[in-house]
Image (cartoon, rainbow, N blue to C red; front, side):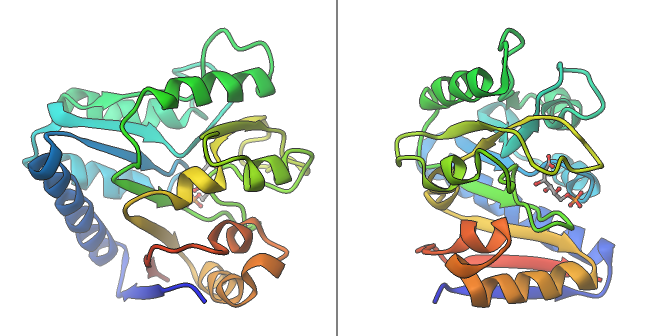
Length: 234
Ligand code: 6PG
C-alpha cells in the first residue's frame, strides 16, 4: 500500500491555481530552510500553463534550480526539448535551469551517464518531483523497452539513465534520458498532475497493481514510502 490522495478540480484553471500554489509553497519552504530549492518538473504539454502561473509567483527565483524529470534526446532549442520549455518560462525569472541532455552525447546511453554525472552535483534529495503520465502509462521517460528494468532498478546512487522506448511514443518518437525510479522516489515531495478521465482510471488501476502493473506508472510508484498527491481534472 502506498499513501496516495487524489485532488479533483472542476477545471484546468482550478487545477493550475492549486498546483501553482502548492509548488510555490514547497519552493518557499525549501528556501526558508536551506537557502535554496531544487525541483524536477515534468515535460509534455499539461504542465505549461501551470508553470507559467507558477513563474508569476513572487519567489526568490535566483535561489531555485530546476531540472526536467526527463528529456528527449534532441538539441536545446528543439520544440521537443523539455529543458527548453522550462527555460523559456523560468530563465527570465532568474531561476537556474539544468538540462539533462548533454549536447555532445553520442548515443542515448552515454547521454544517460552524462546526465547522471551532472545530477550528482545537485543537492539531494530533490525538494519536489512533479510527474506527468502519458496515455500509454509512461511517467517521466520510463517506458517499456530494452532499458525499462535499468530505469526501474538502477542502484540508488544512479540518478538518470538513457532509454529507448519501444514502441516509440508518437508525440515524440526519440530516445530519452530520465530520472530513475529511485531518484524519483527519493524526492521529499512527489506529485502527479494529469488531465482526462482515461488517465484517472489508469492511475487508479496502477495504484492497485503497483509492482504487478503492466504500466510504468504502477511500477514507478511501487514501494513508494512518501505520500503522493495526485492533482487531476477532466
Ligand atoms: C515527456 C514527459 C512525460 C509527460 C507525459 C504526459 O517528456 O514525455 O515528461 O512523462 O509527463 O508524456 O504528458 P502530458 O501531460 O502532456 O500528456
